[in-house]
Image (cartoon, rainbow, N blue to C red; front, side, top):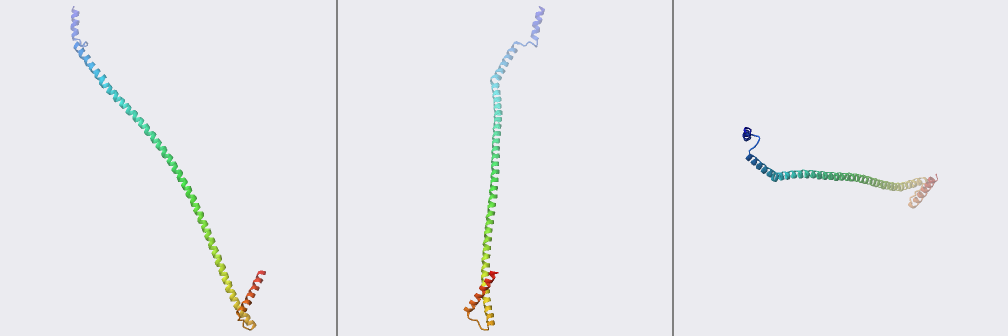
Length: 180
């Protein structure tokens, strides 16, 4: 019996075997911790994790939406830029056409003005020519009558006669010139 008593005595002092009250307190404490963690902390942790997951997924979704919107805006910008380039090219072409048209109009006006000036000059020359011929005929008539009066020896002062003689003389000269 010695052995059984030593075992009982050894059991009381065995550090590996807990006392019964320690087991009850440990089990109760574990149950309380398990209930607190399982019922209170776990839902809060899961809610926090779900919120973080939603926030991350929402951030990713927002980033994707923002990227899609940025791409859409970039495409719109490129389209508008292309349209602006086409409009600028069209305006340049129109300006060139208008410039060529204005240049042609100015050239046409310049030609018309030159023709008008030339026609006016010709008319002035013709008028000056007629005036010179009239003056020359008068001078030739006066000189002819003076010369004829000296040759004939009598005065040819009758104007009507002088004019007839001069006109006849000039007509004969013109006929001779036209025949040659």
